[in-house]
Length: 226
Image (cartoon, rainbow, N blue to C red; front, top):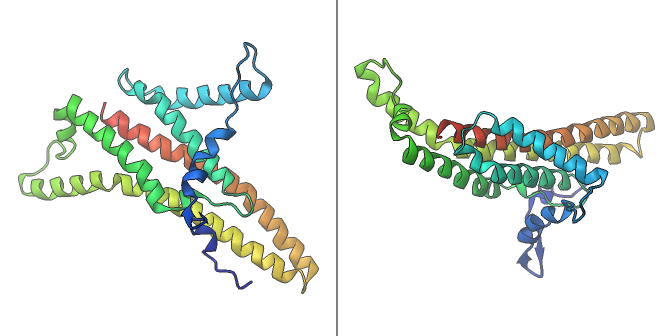
């Protein structure tokens, strides 16, 4: 009960060396691959989910935007597997670190914006000044639109960090309450334990949804700039 509430969010070390890199590289090893002509049910289901996700995200894109399909599919698989592995006991979730999420959000956002300025510079600049803006409001609107553009990667990273961190904290608190009540009141313990199970199911859904939302927003930024 005296355990630090935020201990699970501290980056782990092995022999005083950061182990976060090994943890980040671990999820891709769990993705099954097949060398045979006829796939089994697991591989078939995996390919069907990948095709369904990529089709939903890439439908709105033109030919130039669809060149990002492999990157976006890899991104959603990486975030989803990382979030799900973080729900295991005594595990570490890299997506609870704001620095990790910023490292994913900023390059993808910057690549989409740079592509927009290279291919459609007039349309990209037009976003800074909506049509029909009164002349006195032009400087203020340009500043506001510039800030809203620059804050996009921060919003991506903070959204993912906050949702995953909040769920882990809530599970930690309810789990500690279940352990404390187990020696005091058994019926109350069963009720709290049932809530913990339901919350765990909810967190599994949140882990998948947040991976989809993060990738979808990157896809929308790409669509606006291609």
